[in-house]
Length: 480
Image 1 (cartoon, rainbow, N blue to C red):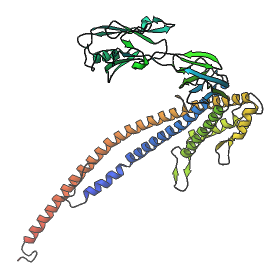
Image 2: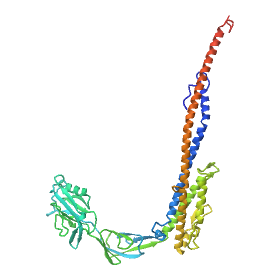
Image 3: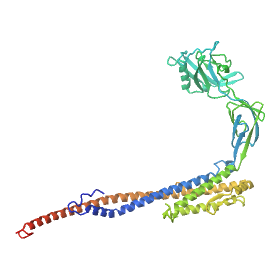
Image 4: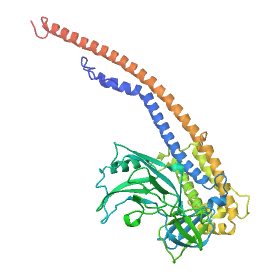
């Protein structure tokens, strides 16, 4: 509302206050619309909270169901593996592992090849003082392949070619060019007492990842002879590629890496250290209860959280006289009734002794909170595992499908939210029209009050003038 402080100056009346009071009365319909919009927004927010809680419960229910192509038994069966000597190896297990104890003896760890530029002479001396030392130009070819029984077989698809010319013909330039090629090798320069040396390290370990270097003077290596300008001799800082070798229950095996799969079915081993002559045990275990119990407990937790959210949104606090944002709304009543009905009615076609969640020890306590009797659940799983699985998956399916009608893309909550948004949009249009009307009403009042102010001011001037004239007449006011 525009300022009205100038009104009343001529008349001396509080026209600004009168105008303000009148406009406050006129604005009541607008205030009512604004309050209604706020209540709708609060309801939308509450519906979002309800949807979040029910969606979390639906997710927990879905977690009771096996994935497509898997059985419930496969879903809830877990495997674990451990190694007695954790400094020798670690292990993990997956579906297909056979429970048992296996003996592991590691004779050799896998390692990647490392080549070092030679330092001939006594004492050793590198031909390169530092990274800026010049080298010959040419094309360095690095082959990757397999060394088996002294015979090297290159793999053509893995060949790396590095061009050295006048722009990069230094030891550092060669290093940078090799790294820029982003192949199966990394290059670095180590400057020691013998001078600067180029070090090439294969990215992958094992005898199938052996390098052969050719084409650039001073940087060649033949894996079959080893007598070239680059060396894998450990006394010079080099290292030969090798596979990990080990035995499981006395059966020899090897791996190009220290992460071993496919040797002991369903088990992944990570080898860390050799233990020749001192075998250690790998223990593989199969568990059919822990995952199932955890999923049931998670479902019960989500159920209670959803139930608490529903109760709070629909409650009325007699002390504070505050109602929940969805108090009295049908969606609250139907959601509560639906959840309780599902708990009591979801059933199984299996063993008559395990037809409902209560048969597994899942029931409401005196406070209306869903609880799990862990002892009763364990006994049921032990007594008839398949029937328990059947019941649990039926419960998961029932909850998942029922909740989809509430929280799904075409569910009740989406429909209610869309309806409220349409009403808010309509309220916005009404408020816009009402604001325009109020502007016109205020302008009309202002014109009327301005005219009244002017008229009264004129009358006051006339009155003052007449009084002055009358006072000046002979015989009036004591004049003779």
